[in-house]
Image (cartoon, rainbow, N blue to C red; front, side):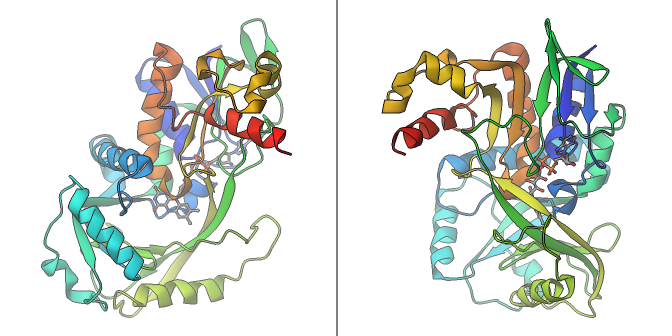
Length: 371
Ligand SMILES: Cc1cc2nc3c(=O)[nH]c(=O)nc-3n(C[C@H](O)[C@H](O)[C@H](O)COP(=O)(O)OP(=O)(O)OC[C@H]3O[C@@H](n4cnc5c(N)ncnc54)[C@H](O)[C@@H]3O)c2cc1C
């Protein structure tokens, strides 16, 4: 009997499993493929905030960026390359955003003259963040799960018995779904995701890059293994499960985009990575207990008329939780969301309303009413 069974061994499942294990809980992880075989394995895993005007999302990302930098550096030092980050505006709209960011941020900004040697775009507005990083995505997920039991099975059903759940022969008191952009077996109508396909490449080049930079795509610093990550593309139309991917064409696009801001010399592509980012409709992550929509609407039909009901009053699937919808910021958000969900699960601490899964219930109910 485990305290918690987690379904999905991407960065969200791995971070939560690590948090649970180091907090003294027993945990088992189910993974249908291999660790970090979903979006997490494709990620460039750049640790950066969002360079935009202050909003709920930028504040969450800023807090999570600082938290995750410290977390990976302290606990998974072997898997992080620290370096400054130069963010360059790609158009006048972004230029305004960067100027607003510079004015409002409390993050440490530095002079980038030392880093700009290879920049091919020296004229656009840019900002240099003193602290940033790129994480070894697959390495860190594996290391987090090192002493944790991982069962390689596709979970397509589970049952409830008394006060525990069974998945095949495994029993656990609580379930957490961290299944990213894959089919969600909970099948509740009120949450749906946007799947955003992405391609990243690892390259070798003859110049040594001592900063991360970001314009049309991100280009990492030269990592410990001398590789440089370039990516990723964003494609909301491509379905990697149904269509064949044109690697050659996409490599050209990535390298062309990289060249808009940096001169990479003698490039050799070493490896391709593809995957899906799973974003929510309001761009905020989706965390917390899973609401039973039908029971909740039966209890509070007034939700259909747009009337407010406190999240605490909703009907929930007992002891079932999820973390998802982290979009292009999974590695930035995961350590913070794991802490938040842990406190919610075991210390009854309320989640921020803006990340709580329950926020989708009333929005969906209103849409149902309006046809
Ligand atoms: C190309 C690309 C570049 C990115 N770059 C960055 C970046 O620079 N910085 C950043 O912070 N984020 C980045 N991201 C985003 C980040 O990778 C994702 O937000 C993050 O990986 C999501 O993690 P996850 O754990 O929620 O999902 P996933 O990593 O997709 O993990 C879900 C796991 O669940 C397993 N699973 C699913 N269903 C089942 C089931 N029924 N039974 C058992 N197992 C199941 C899957 O096999 C998978 O391993 C990028 C993403 C992509 C695609």
